[in-house]
Image (tube, rainbow, N blue to C red; front, top):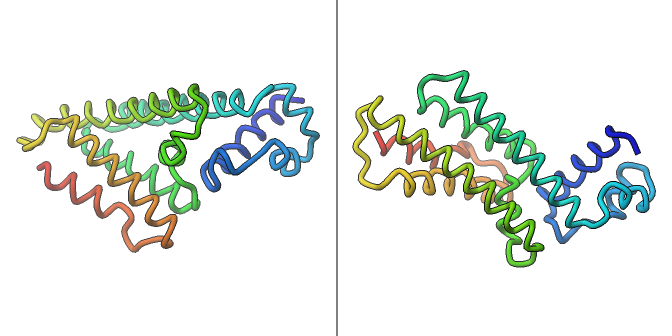
Length: 187
């Protein structure tokens, strides 16, 4: 199995996880989709848990690279936050749940290692959002009535929640409305 096949397996697993959930797909699904035998999958990922761990780590690394890129590209933390929200919009447009949301929906049923990785990924995003809010306050003269960590949770909740509602009901006219409203109230 080549590296490109391994990457294809990770991508396929990601799409299944973000559209059906972790419990709803199997190695048989991946083997059929990629066009390989199940035994070939076990060569690189002996268990589904191993596959899930690799998937979450890879996704997390790429997502954190995107956040670092936003930090590098934009001096204004508010612009960074707005660009961050567009990552969720891209998922909505692709009819994919955010990975963190998909993991959170099945948290109690996930293997412990995936629970830990899912929580870490959420915590990393919350920490990044909080950092942007802390930087934005003096730059924009904000005096939020709530601590930055609570505001970060509200912003992430708005994005994750809107993703789930759009997933269930179809795309809304403005999936970022709640996020943008909360961000505006911080000013």
